[in-house]
Length: 83
Image (cartoon, rainbow, N blue to C red; front, side, top):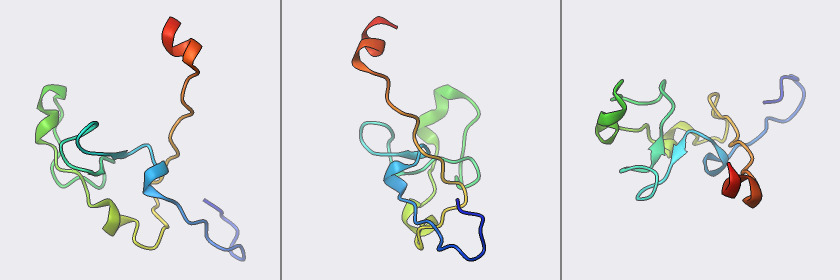
């Protein structure tokens, strides 16, 4: 985020955040899976289906989510095939 007090705040989109998981492919429920925003989280990976994500629309209503992290760049096709 921009730390200058005179600069306009940068709007962020949940669709570009690494913590957003979308149903039905990545999660059971669409939402923010940042540990600070989840009302119910599990330590065991096998219990992942029982996690309840935070409401990403309410968290980022003004577009200034403090926990926003950009998604890492996707690997090239060559890297995905051979690694």
